[in-house]
Amino acid sequence: MYFTSFLIAESRVSPIPPFAFDQHEIILGVEKYQTVLSGNLIGNSHSEISLTTKDSTGHISLFIYSFVNGSWIKSVESELSNDILFVDIATIAGRDRLIFYENGRFSYFDPEKQKSVNLLSTSFNYKGSSSGRIPWVNMTFDLNNYSLDDFIIPALDGFSIFMQKSDGTFTDPVKMGPPEPYLDGITFDDTRTYREVGLNPMTIPWYLRRVHFFDHNLDGRKDLVFWNEDHFDVYIQSEIGQFDATAQSFSTDVPFDLDGMYSFVFQFSHENTFSLLAGLRKRSSHTILEDIKDMNGDGVADLVTHTLSGRSFLKMKSLYKIYYGQATEDRIQFMKNKGTTVFPSGKGGGAVIGIVGIKVSGCTIAVITHRMYAGGRMCKVFDV
Ligand SMILES: [Ca+2]
Ligand SMILES: [Ca+2]
Ligand SMILES: [Ca+2]
Image 1 (cartoon, rainbow, N blue to C red):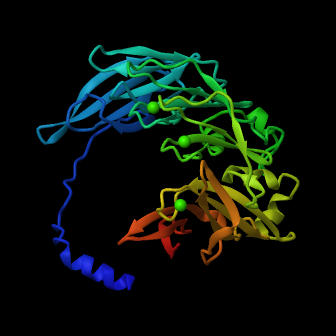
Image 2: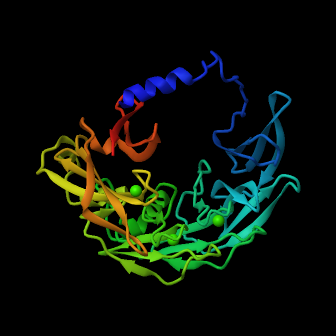
Image 3: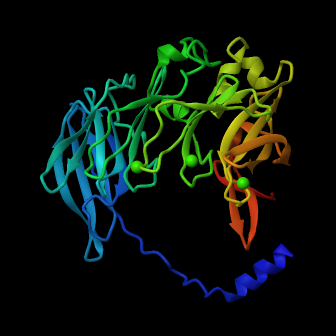
């Protein structure tokens, strides 16, 4: 039936022109360290391309390329502070801005004034390298859907949330969420504890995997939710777009061992790396809280777990379970007897990139994206 639907839909689609895209080339120079990001930085009808470079003497420069009269031209060239540690693009007061972090403060670059403007100060304990390239580190998300990006800054003992006001300034931070649970853990290929490794461009996305974001109390506004050992802490979003400073808690009978895919790497620190890769060990199985999002399109968030089982770290089997969120009078419940299973075939479960729920021709399907050993990607599709 679905195949027939696709055929009907296909017959109504206008033919795609053979060359739907123009190809352009931008020469970005020869600096060894280059970071490219895109956004609507100038405020016209096209997005721009920003290039942040660092030369061999540590000088940091910013270039913005704009699309003008059919070609890309360099529209901004400016020196930036040499103390910048990482960059990002965020929506500040209605405009995309290149933002950067240095010396305990976030700033953005104003292309009209050709200078940096302070955004907020924070005692964020960044442990990334200050030499080499300038990484892209994203800690900005529009949490209340006001089209203004807010900051979630992780720390060892929770998260600091800075909400953006309409004038582009930020509220005082609200601290929320439990401490990072693996601070004394060691990954199987390291000798340092996670506490010693600290917050850097690789681990910051790991920390942020512990932030769950869905409408728990069914009032139409998404809430911030954290797994805290054996229950969830939820910080409810108010009708003015702020989050309660005090958490409510709720529990679930859905079984999982770990929260966030990153936590998987701390489960093997006592094992020999060669045995782990070659599979010369007992079979292990871990079930991870993968995500909480609406998978079947009914507007109620669903809880997705990912079980990885096997002997070799490289050949683990994946098993996804989707537990449908049940709307009660005033909140969502996740129950272990209300679910479905998605089993992607093939080995290398660790190569699974993610699972999303999308609607196609009125049906909702789960799409699992795999990273293939040849370097490409493939998707597998399941009805849910
Ligand atoms: Ca916001
Ligand atoms: Ca809510
Ligand atoms: Ca749902």
